[in-house]
Length: 257
DNA sequence: AATACCACCAACCGCGTATTG
DNA sequence: CCAATACGCGGTTGGTGGTAT
Image (cartoon, rainbow, N blue to C red; front, side, top):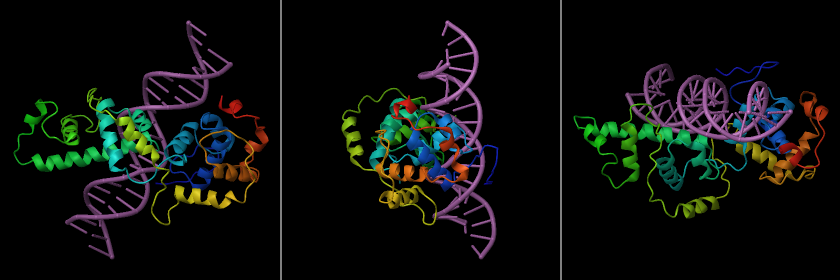
């Protein structure tokens, strides 16, 4: 159940819009390191860990949204066969996708495939035969992979990586092509607060704001900056921790190390 | 129309690693 | 060099919305 806790105690569970905006604001000021510091100074009743996660998996403007493209799916399969469950490593090869996202995708895919295979091979087919000859038979690397995955008794989507599959030449080209895609925002559910809404709001505020003061030369979009700083100076009582506790640095290095 | 089931994904947790004093 | 702290990663859980019965 969702229970919104106020006061002293740490908040857990889903983030509110207000928390998101607050976090974006502080990340843009202090950078996306120093999470404990941000957690403290922002007044968010969240751990640094939680703040980082929210940023990395959801708020970061460089994230893609929406379903995996077939190309991305292919890449995931390929890299997973290479590296196993090294999600963050795989994620680095798919710009705009997070390790969490890829992990979830993989899990879902494996479950789906496991069920399919079960259905196909269930009535008295000798499934054990396929398990002995490691990467079996099909021309479909994905299918082979699935079979391999499924024959493992533990967590069915969990592999240690196969440390093989040397035939992935030209991967860099593929990745580069992927990177050509700009940030895609979601065509997500109506009426639900989403990142779209936030970014839209930020856009709206763009023309209205104080111009950027700090050049942290991050990947953060200018409009966020405008929005952030604009609002930063207008904090109400509950959000004043920062303004009373800190002075702005001359450069980002002082804050990001 | 109700409800049972499933897929998706956000968020938490534990632990290993890196950094800092 | 060591201890403390912060960060990052992978595994897992639980809520929500959609679909099937």
